[in-house]
Image (cartoon, rainbow, N blue to C red; front, side):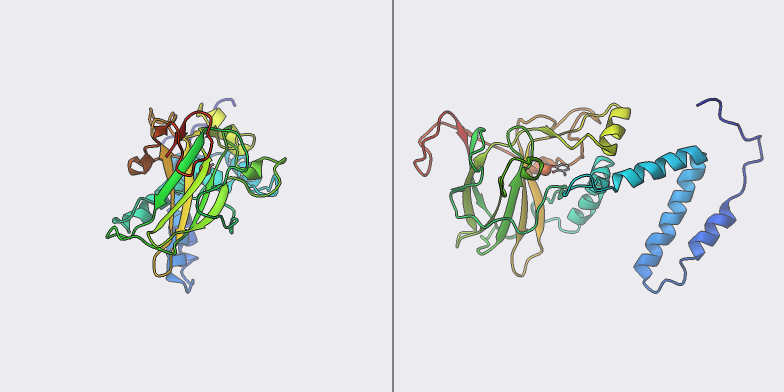
Length: 289
Ligand code: MBD
Ligand code: FE
């Protein structure tokens, strides 16, 4: 509020000795990687502060914001990961990791709703637990970089419901729903029934939601299903598949997926079918593969 006092020309302080002293203070760190990261973090933060002529009030506001973002508001949630996601930091880290493994299916960010150790499920079973939605049949094959099937891969799957809520956000549910662990067969395959995921807002009732509102950004993610794949002798793969034709897949900056998580090669055809289903299940209306 009010007028910022302007520094008189030529009186801007030379803060390089202060930055250099802080950077040098990490010099005794025995871990070279930690030394590098903290030294450069200090230099980067100082440069940001000086470039923007940050005031004490602004910095206090930022500290308050970060403090609030780190508070656990429910059993499952604080907001640092959402902040990382909405600032695109998670996607930058992911893109760097992906560029080190160019021959695999693209990776994607983990998101805040993964729960370790989901319930093991049989091939062909229904992971929707009776929730309503458009029936979805998934038939998935895990292959190596040469296209050879990987049998015995352990695949964790998780997704939101028709309204965009993950089970951990639905207090009335009793036990895990729309999340499961499958093990691929000799062909590297597994199949399951679920419901088609829809677009939905990331949790926006906290500090990250206020940040998005303050800058006129929407909180919506494009419809997606998450996968975490582990197989002996292979590096794990964390990825997501997006529903081709779904909302928030493209658009201007700030109008696409709120966490910058969409990669073109992860947009997948979800084909409309009419019965009969592969397992003879009675389905009312369309289903998709
Ligand atoms: C999600 O469901 C998600 O996948 C990510 C990356 C961030 C917020 C909510
Ligand atoms: Fe998600």
